Image 1: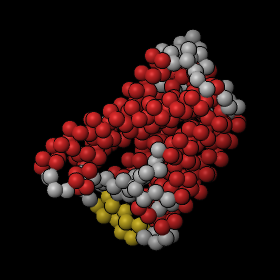
Image 2: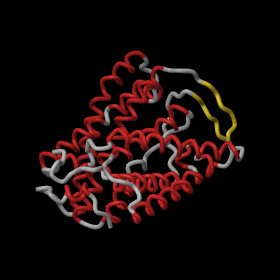
Image 3: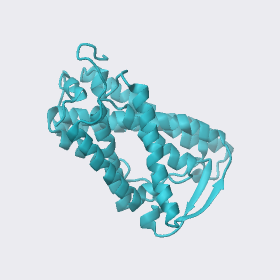
Length: 306
């Protein structure tokens, strides 16, 4: 389907199990990282409980816990790299971690994520689904969330696309790798607050979009940038829920009307408008892959990041 350096590098791995065994290993790595994240979260949670022992729900939803939770996803990055480097004996390039065009692709991804979110809110505004816009002013937690979302988005892209998608593609077909990693990406969001059929469909579509971006550029940076700016814009600029989770924000854009269009408690990731725009992006990216319209990272075969 596509002459991809990441997949070729992954095929050089010393340990490359079958697709289904790799999926089991994926869940093992995910749960190990989850346990480590819980351990990290225990420290700030205990401190918050000492200050406010009567309201556990308020503590869980506090800016400190929310931000620490996002930062703790660094454990996913650490676990994946340890497994891929020490067990599979893979190069960093096989995970999409390359120096070439890293900053350029990341910033481009940030612009795409901001544009995507702006288009969805613009459509909602034009059709009268925006009730009010409130300026919340600056809060230090928004500054911290900016960096926390950089870590969180990178952890998911490394786990789902850099590790899992390339592992499956190296043993099977690229379409299967795209669909399977996107499906599992969707399943990881299944227990989020306010989940609906449309929100899960959209998460699946996002997974396909991020997968295609990685294949187009031969790295994870553009997907990381788009994933980061999309999450940050929804939660910390527009004040909407990010996959059902509420955060401090610069503005609060209140939506009104049909839940199918506004996304209800899940945020605009549960909107049919997001579905339609996402499908359009998939078609555009699919066309770009077919015609090879986007230049990949110029990583020379004899100069692969180890």
